[in-house]
Image (cartoon, rainbow, N blue to C red; front, side):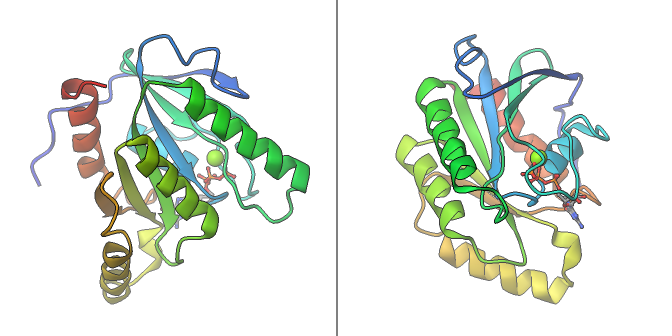
Length: 204
Ligand SMILES: Nc1nc2c(ncn2[C@@H]2O[C@H](COP(=O)(O)OP(=O)(O)OP(=O)(O)O)[C@@H](O)[C@H]2O)c(=O)[nH]1
Ligand SMILES: [Mg+2]
């Protein structure tokens, strides 16, 4: 496969925030990563950046509790949003999460792309679908990442991909639906191409 010209030159952790309000207006574009706890949001960020543990990952769901900002190539952000749907989290925590997310999207006018991350083995949950709907309402372009592709055989992959294609057919904001593996970096080039296009050529 021909490699995209686009390269990640630098990536640095900037800050963590409970709402994103403090840096939402610095003018730089933001690419957000959402999905339920443990689906692999932080791993995807590390895979794209080819960094081992810039975004903290782990086996304990709920690892990412704040909104984490990473500055990429000195001109746009990756925003690692906290995961949802972790059963052991209290009701108050869940409310806090909802408030944090709503506040973030209300404040930030610079979100130009969302990676909506799902586990390729499982159907989307209510929470997954409501975030996907939210991006649709805000008219934010989104890419569905079908993560942990390495857990499936090629046959299973084919069947799952087809089911997801059908399920998401009606959404106008979904610009691509990509099986991904943060272990093998499968489809990393495709992801970079999308990022390149969005941060370099499209206005917001
Ligand atoms: N096999 C496989 N494991 C993965 C993949 N992506 C992530 N994981 C594993 O899944 C677990 C959770 O990954 P994280 O990246 O921490 O997930 P997260 O969505 O950021 O989780 P929270 O921050 O808790 O919301 C870790 O043990 C990762 O190693 C993948 O593509 N394949
Ligand atoms: Mg995380």
